Amino acid sequence: MNKSVPWMFLIIVAVQTITVSSAEGAISFCPTKTEIHIWEPCAFNLGIIPGSQLDARIHQTSSAQGYTTLVRRQDLTNDTSYDDCIRSRWDDFDVNCGVLLVHSHGGVRSSASFVAAAYSKDETVLFNPAGGGWADSDSNGSVDFGMFVAESTAISGQHYVGITRTWFENSWFRLQDNMTIAVISACDSAKYYQESYSILDALNTQAAFGYRDCVLVADMGPDVSRLFGLMNGNLGSGNCRKAGDAYAAGGYSEYFLMIGSTDSTLCPAPADFNPGNDGSGGPVGTAYINLDSFIEGVGPVGDSVLKVDVSQGNCEISDKKFEPSQSSEDPLNRSRQVRFTYKYKGDLCNPAYTITVTAKAAGIKAWGGGGQQMDGDKSAPNGDDVTWSFHY
Image (cartoon, rainbow, N blue to C red; front, side, top):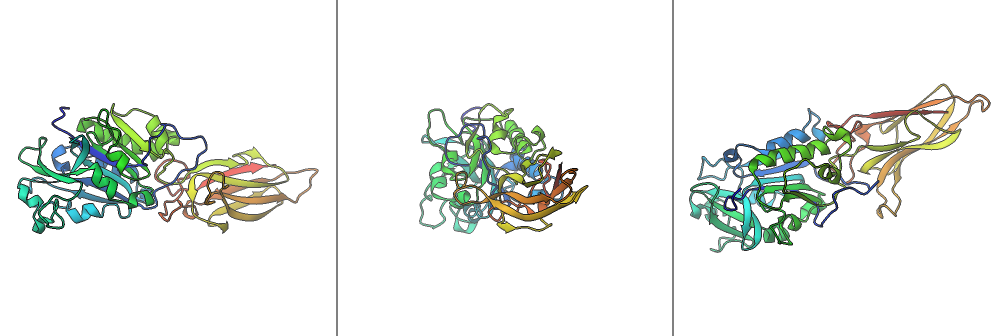
């Protein structure tokens, strides 16, 4: 694509350079908020709408993985209105945002990357308080800090408000608190040739994806669909649910880039069991399920979290509880394990028992208050239980 016709697309992730593969055994974070925020100020003109593809990947059947979607779009056939893309909504778009996608035009201005957030045929409307004061929210006659107004080279007859990396660096502070996963779908949103600092770096969030050069809009939809198809487990056999693993799986357009935390997931899922499924236990021991992401809960649990059934023997089941993580892997001792103790009380000369355990999705939820339920089979939709058994 010609440099004079920049594009943009956004989903937010962390703010440091990463390696593309997740650390073995590392525990992930899920977003602490469960709204998908999609900003597409020229989606109707672009023809392909990545926001719709992102929404479809996360909303698998009615359970929707615990997320709801908020879409802000601007129909450019109505040039006197910003439709849903008004300034006040842009300023508050980080509130309750768990997954962020900004899909628009973008590029580089004065050696700094930017994205276009609103359009108008009439340049003065972008300053007019009656129209929302998009570029001049305090009505002081000057363009707001970190913004500019220019004539579009991509959409004939349109003017737009450009949002620079400086604005992102100083705004939307809640994205990191929300553990947001974000994508900026726009040209030059990640890197611009030798530029060392971009919009992606300035987002201040958990995990972020964008483009390090100009990119065709036809590539953006498939990139988003593949990324979140891997993260929701529908692709990759559920083995690429972490953001870093999904990115490392490849298959994206040439300039697609990730920075931030590789260990981000959409919801918790089983990582391993002990004893393993159909494995052998001893006369006395502790059994547990580990989750790949931090979960809510401390202390004892009931059957609504972990249901344990004993057959072919006599076992005493006790101490069912959420187990805190070790300080070496998590100083805050958040839970990622549910466990119980079993003790065989039958004839030791002729031992025989089978213990079947069901971990309940409704009782195992992501840490941080988002409430995303466990995905027992590691493939969306979530909300399904997982059952395993062991014997002696």
